[in-house]
Image (tube, rainbow, N blue to C red; front, side, top):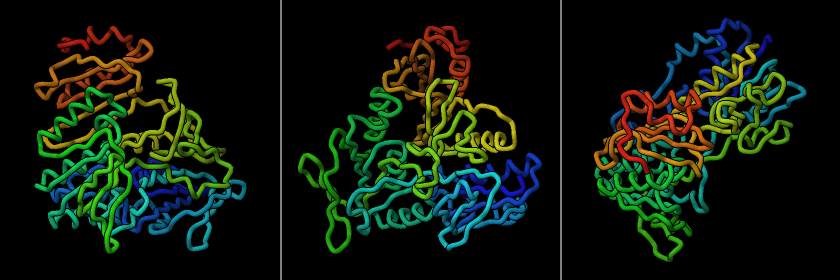
Length: 401
């Protein structure tokens, strides 16, 4: 291969480009990114950037001199609009096309929206520019409504509440973060937010956004009540950014459908939030929207593009920081999994839990318990039987639910 193109210049795309050079590939490398900014880290956007603990530049992953050392044709601020698989070309929004012998797709996801979300005062949070705009809006001391209580929504609510704002979270499900962790952990997250003064409205959908003079004024709920708001943050999840691949012939569904090697077609691989692949460790197809997976999958995809032929079968890791609490998790969390507390006590704000499915330990969670959850991780790695958690050294089951 003499020409490799990477589409997407966030964590996965940057890692793919750096891995190519680190592996000694010396051909013509093109890195295409829709945003004009150099690659930056996304986890701080809903935490340190919003609270003002970090200035935006601190989230940058690599400086322009660092990027120049990649010896890549940087196409920042350019958007891929189509992929010609037989012709081995990526078409760009300016009318140009770029040829390739190998391609890595790392275009990530795009946030879901509601009708009338173009009203002033309505925000989503995906890009650094989104975070800068939302931070500026929060500094005016508004009444804030967050629609959606997944990881992003609860992190935004925590950041806004930490700065002293009046915050309400609306969630159609019965508890926050029910997916992936289930009702019990969701109830603990709800209690955490209530203890810090955040209002929660769970179990009720949003009917519509209300506005006047092209500015949002509130949110009407499914039960007929209307909550006033100056700022509304939509945290409704995201969809894979695959629109530019329509008509390419690649298999699309919940992302770019790849095989176990992250291969979507001959010479074409995908990595990060946009990639769907069968993880042999768990025997299931998955698509993971978490920071560590972006890095790990990009390394694996590039390795396989260069001939490694190694299946990508990681134990996913992710975390969330809210107020003074860090929740860390390894593995998968099927909706019908059994959950047991295996260390500590939720009442003390410090515990670790194991999740069992199909007779095996498939996931572990730590609530302010970093050492314990790292120890438990080996049960997921080793396909330990569900009864094995009781034999874990240094961990004595506190309660079994």
